[in-house]
Image (cartoon, rainbow, N blue to C red; front, side):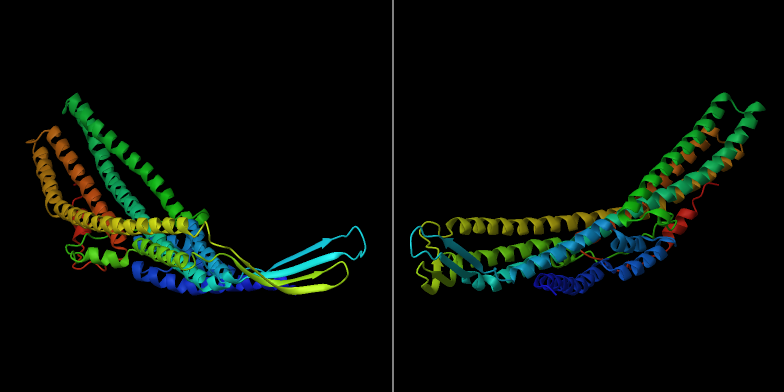
Length: 465
């Protein structure tokens, strides 16, 4: 086996070992933050097993949780991001290697006797580089840690994006089912109105209003169906699905809006300890501190090359001895490098402070939005929807008793439909806001306390009679 092949195999083995050590650590972080698993799909056997698991997940109704799991296992952009860890680990290996020694040879040919060729050979090693190996490895290790944190943050971003896309499609699907049911009712009402008009019981205006209502609901349903198609392809991209795996279905209704939710105090402190992007910024500060210390320590030391030089003179006499080469720090004593690193360090520290302030603001804003959307959804569910439903029932009874005009019935139907749409929007917005809050605090908020099934049941009770 050639020496070059041995070196290549050694590097490949070291990279594989580095990824194997990094993956469990990243898996644990992701599991703590999301409750999901990740998999670096670099081995054919692992890839087949993961593909089988994904296939099983997408061939039963998807939930928000299972959709996130599919994305974390199958999103190709995320898989490409995982390789940043391997690249950073390769840099760590490179930082621990010595520079290759420098070999030089020269030949000079005399123009008169003695006529032997003058040959000079030398080999030298930069021993200053030997001193820097432990420090370089420390800096590279910090960069590897920063890369793992950054990859973890990308995973959390993807999870939040998938949840948002899922809730949007779920709400659209729910609204389409509602519009479809109303459209069937309106089709029967329109048919009745046509017969009444032909019998001369209702004027042209009432028939035109009924026809316009039917057409509008049909148009609304068509627009929602188009939006569902776009949302479906967005989820396909996020989940990394193609072929037969795109024939998935999602559960019909959004999860129940809980009457009680997460503890509202201490979220900012949780975010300060959990946000991986903030940890990335802090790690960058530590790396700059190390680089600055290294530069200041060796600011007066340049290259130090020690080696052996051998020369054969033209009379065949050989002269051999040690060589030493030093950079003399007269002009450049590292002033520029130190000033640059000091400025970069101050810049990184200010960015950490700015990120911390922004994160706290994001948490407060997301918390307030969750509370507002939860209260709005519950108000729709417990107050406005029952009221609109009751008004429609009473108007329909009055219409059947010829005490209310078709216009009154039409107006009551439109108001109930508007309340239905508003409720679904508020229901959807609550879960999207909750996903945003989990992203803001850097992890799960825990199981919703006191959740009931009243949201879904209340919505089902408001079907148009």
